[in-house]
Every structure is written in structure tokens, then in C-alpha cells.
Length: 254
Image (tube, rainbow, N blue to C red; front, side):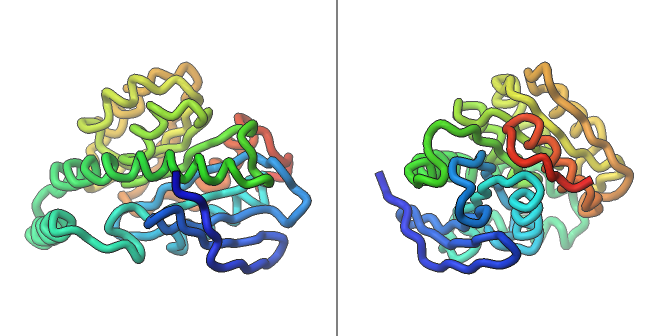
């Protein structure tokens, strides 16, 4: 098993940020200031074309640490961030770009490529979780959540379906076809975000994925707007969700 190695460390406003590697996987860990041992851990998956420390990921991580007292970990998906692309990655990305430039539906290509990435990323996430739980400030006994939208959902749904350590998850903004089977295996509490006027994912498709989860405790958050117009307050809602289901501080943003 690959061990976790920290490469950088910074601290600001009570949040400690550390970059790390687990084998060839690059990641980042945000934590409360020292003294908050064994706080719950939230894993976060980034969207397609982004990376572990894109502005949205940093903002969500800081909210989760400040509002819930959580540790928050991200890793770069295969072919993202500083990780090299394979020839398959290059072909699929080029095809997506040509399809979007032509104004044609890109959903089938995104689903196929993201399913391919999930097959590579899920084992990496499980190995990363193993390594994170070796840290004394996290440990093996605390609860674990998962937070991922777009490609973060494409990877997070199959991960949550097979990873018993994940006990609550926030998903959203993805098509159902490649995820229905895995969603039907998930029974942990779910919060799901959907954009009512999404130009890429038909409304009925988003609702079908929400319906596919076997969880008895699941909540749909449907907001007006297009695909990239998810309200920022949904990040605060995710903090409240994880505080409810993982424990943590009672200082989640109002």
C-alpha cells in the first residue's frame, strides 16, 4: 500500500492546508487548527476539466472546515491537474471539444469518458482513504462523507456504492444512464443538486438519477438556472448536511 507523503503546508484563519501524494496521485488536505483530532473526514471530487485546488474546491473545503470542523481531502482525477493524460484521454477530450463547438449534444461522450475515469479513480480514492485514516488526526473510527458534482458525481456514485466507510454523500448535475445501477446500491443519506434549466442535462434525466438512489433519506435541491448557475448557498447547505449526518461543529453557516 502506498503511504501518504505531505509536500507543502500553509495555515490561514484557523485552516491548515497540506498538499500530499499517495503514490502517483496528487491531493490536498484541509484541516482545522491543531487540537481537533479525529474530526470527521469529507472527500471531495472535482468537476471535469478542473483539479483538486480549483477555486470552487478551495472555497467548499474552507466552508466545510470553518463551518463543520471537518477534515477535507481532494485528489486530482486521472488526466487532471498535474497528472499526465493518456492517448485515450486526449482523444476523448478532443472529441468533446469538437462536439461542443458544433453545438451538438455532448452528454453521451461525457458519460462514456467519465465512466472510464471512474474506473481508474475509484481504486485511487480507496487507497487515498486508507492512507488518510493512518493519520492520527483522522484515524479509522470517524465517519466519512463524499461531496462531488458533475464529474465528481460520476466518480463518487460508484465509489460510494462499494465503499462502506462513506456514510453520507452530496451529488448532483449528472446524467443517469451510466450511474443508475450503482445508485441503486446506495442507501446512505443523500443530498442531490439539480439545475431546473440545465442546457446539457434534461430535467427528466436529473430527476431519474435522484430517483435511482435506494436511500430512504434523500433530499432533492432543484434550483432555477443553467448548468453552471448552481447557487453558492448550496455549498453552505452541504455543510449543514454533513454536520447532521457526520457530526462535527454546530457552527455551520446560517
